[in-house]
Every structure is written in structure tokens, then in C-alpha cells.
Amino acid sequence: MKHIVVDLEMNTLAKQFKEEKSICGSEIIQIGAVLLDENYQEIGSFHTLVRPQYNNRIEKRIERLTGIKTEMVQNSPVFEEAIQQFFSWCNSQNDDILIYQWSESDCIQITKELQLKKIQLNEKNQELLQKFQDFQKEYRDTLGVPRALSLKDAVMYAGVDFQGRAHNALYDAENTAVLLRIIRDPNLCKNALEHVIEAFAPKPFGTSLGDLIHFEEFDIPA
Image (cartoon, rainbow, N blue to C red):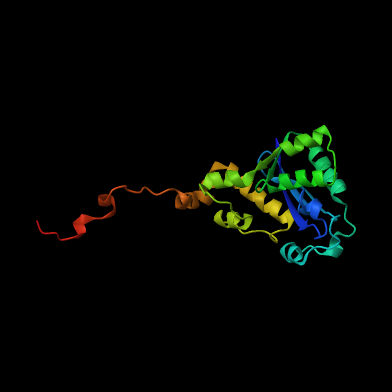
């Protein structure tokens, strides 16, 4: 069994595409992924920028967030070609694979963008979409955290340094892969996250007033 960790970056559709926005509000502009062996060690990677089709520029706030500029994607493949390249890379692995994403949003984005651009996947690639797993949920459940976590916070909780730039798809995939390796190794998980798990664990809480007040601290006359 091999493992693939994938991450996406998106750009919003231009304002004039109001009908299209009702289907999908963003377009993928970067796909990054890492391939892990059965021991969760990195053995390969995939990366491509993607040229948006419903906005002729990368929005300034997206540029600030991701570092991706309009001129960087002008000669890149469009979504249909890029996603086929990614699926081909996944299918080229001579083993069963599982695919991990940080939250469910990446699989949802791919599904909506396929619908927006009227792209039909073959059966094999449709099966790949069914293999996407929400690793953020697994991480949250391990820690006992009820709310969503940013990837950067999750890396901080694990006591490791975030590598590269946040909101770069390949770096985000690599950092998620580090967390996956920690969570799946009991010894690494204990060493890295035991103090965090304890911090988030529910504390016993008495239900009576007597449980809350230490009466022995008071000098009360009989």
C-alpha cells in the first residue's frame, strides 16, 4: 500500500461569471502531491501550476497568500489537462493507494470544477476520487479537538517546524505528510502529541457545590 498526500491552491472566478460561480466559485491554480511508501516515507512528488479559464489574472489577495502571480500560470496547463496529469501519476504507482487531503475541501473543489467545465472522468479516475480521505478529521479526532485546525497550527502542535511557504500546494502536501507519518506511528505520536492530547482532554468536573469549594480552608464555627 502506498499513500498520496495532495493539496490544492485556488483562485476566484472573475466577477462577470455569476452563473458559473453558482456551480463553483474558484478554480485550481496549483496541484501539489507527495508519494509515501508503506512506512510513510516520501518517495516521489507531483507538482504543476494550472492556468485559470474564468479569470485572466490571479487576484491580488490570492497572490499575497500563495505567491503565485498571473505571469507564472500563463503557460501552464488548464484544469482538464492538469487533473488528468495528476490522475495519471496516481495510477502509475504499481500498488494500491490511498489519497489524503487536509479537510474535505480539495475533493469537493475537484468535483465542482469537473462539473463547471463539463469534464467526464473515466471509471478509473472516478475511483480515485472515492479514495480521498479527510486527514484533518483523523488528526483532530486523535487530539480530541472539536474545531477545524489550520495546517500550520497542526504542525505547531506536533512540535515540528513548518517547512517552506504555507499555501504552496507542494509544501502544504509535504507538511501534511509529516503529520500523517507521526499520527500513524504510535511511538512518534506519543512523543510528539501526548502533551497536546492531555491538554485538550476533558477535565473531570464535579456537579455539586461541595466539589467546587474546599470547606476545610475556612474556619467555620460549630
